[in-house]
Image 1 (cartoon, rainbow, N blue to C red):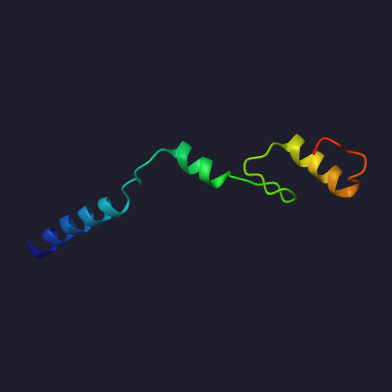
Image 2 (cartoon, rainbow, N blue to C red; image 1 turned 90 degrees about the horizontal axis):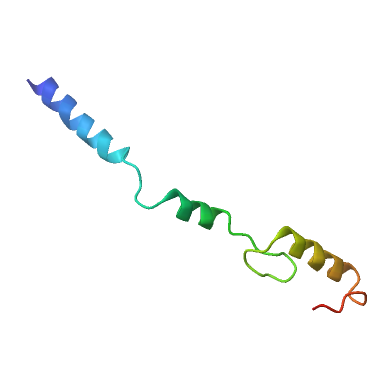
Amino acid sequence: MTRGKQKIEAQKRNAEKNQKSKGSQLEARAVALKSSCPICKVIGTFFSHRIECQALALNPSEYTRF
């Protein structure tokens, strides 16, 4: 009997441990994919914005947008 009871308790512990975390995958993905521009430090920038910032950093006299 002892072995059977230990097995049931171990299964319960494993089920609790392996239970999926609460929250959606979209929220976790948004946190993981949060990026920022290394030049102007804007969070969640697009690729085109990064290209413009890099060009501005290389030669600021040509770009008057910022």
